[in-house]
Image (cartoon, rainbow, N blue to C red; front, side, top):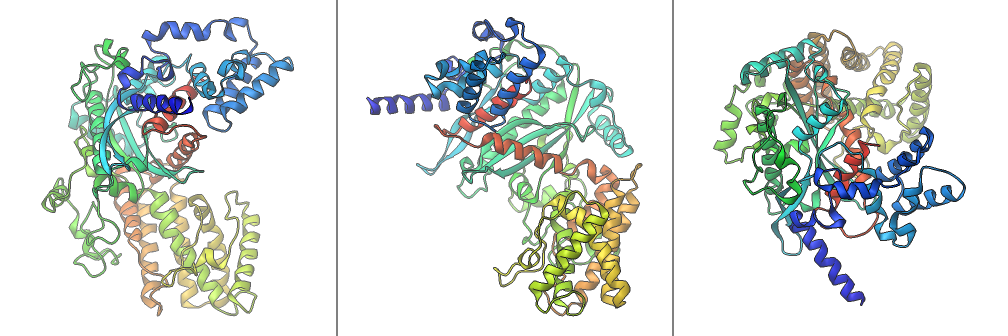
Length: 613
């Protein structure tokens, strides 16, 4: 009997993974909230808490429990247990939750029942299923698998129609740089500025906490509202990306082709007459197959954000070891024709700025596949942004802080202690004291010799190990320490270090000034890089103050991109990193079968559910 049950379960999982149009008609995989699911919704809402005349607090308690489950903070079994105990203690508002899984008799159905309950009042559109090539470890081949997505144009229409966001907010370019971007895009595409929405795309891979697997997230945002929450439209475990040697492009490109189709619909501003793959509408598409006419708005992609690893995967850019390291200019390695190590105004890479289409032509000549994302209406390479978080806070700034701290603990006579380890302890006491004096909220939690210079690698260079926010808030602390040392020792080296930290601090401060002054940012960056280069040239040890490619990314960001796209704080990835962290937490499995589409469907359905809680 057990083996028969296992076989039935395997057949059902295979059916769900390969035939979404059939799966959508089964009770275990239904999409809730669509017009053709009226009877199911009625059955779920019958004798619901709202019909029982609950007080506001009782609804809040019920939604709180559903929220804990949807965010994966508690298991379905735990939530059921809390609801059951609360109900026995006289609490109201959790009657339906206490009944999930046949009142606990079938715990394997609890998550399914909670999801149905959470989706009852969902206003977001149902999932869209598409065939995507995914890696099969058993056969070592890429097989077409049905994966779920949320279509951005449907999401935006739902948000606007529900009143969650207004058109005026979406098209309001609040800075000069944004207004220039809006004018450029609308003039190029022939759109009305009052109804044309600019989109931003973010992609990133983030580890899931328990199993060590990486989940790849794709989200949309509105650049004119930098603080607006992200809209998740796709998610897939990295282990299912193609491993044939293509770098995952055989899986990524079809996902991007789907996204390009979405963006073309946004460019037209009208509902599609068919699916992206020319297939007949699936059963799960019954709701969208009836939609006709115009959205009432148009939109286009004009901002892409991500770290260097994601750019390499999505656009096939060369890595830090490539002969040419930049998609905006011809900067090369230190032994090339335009070395990135030249940082002054006469640097040769400054004369190699790529014109429109020039970089893409070079990629084609090298036989590199062009990313489908560049087929989006109005999209161009200049809209692929450099992120302050990865280029500076987790890059150049950590190099500066690491070298500064290593210089402090390596030199005798500045800090108390006869060994490097004891001097590190003295430095940490000094940092803690300045933290307190400056009332710094985001702090490095500890400082050891290995957090400054790793001893596990023989060729390691000083680089502080810290998070992005921690490094950014550590700069003024380091500056205070450097100024005191420069004043007491008065040597050219320490004066140069103090000036370097001063200009780095000026850069960060300029990000908070309104209106944004691009020239101030560019000037601070040039001074930073020039002083760092001077320290590198003067160092007798090549591992100290080493020049790395991220210094070039810093210059591209501050000296060029900021003057065109505006304040780097408007397109840095801090909010995106928080969002993908949330997605990873939701995606973490608590057990059960994990077919290719399982995690993707669970996360997207929970994202839909959370919108209504």
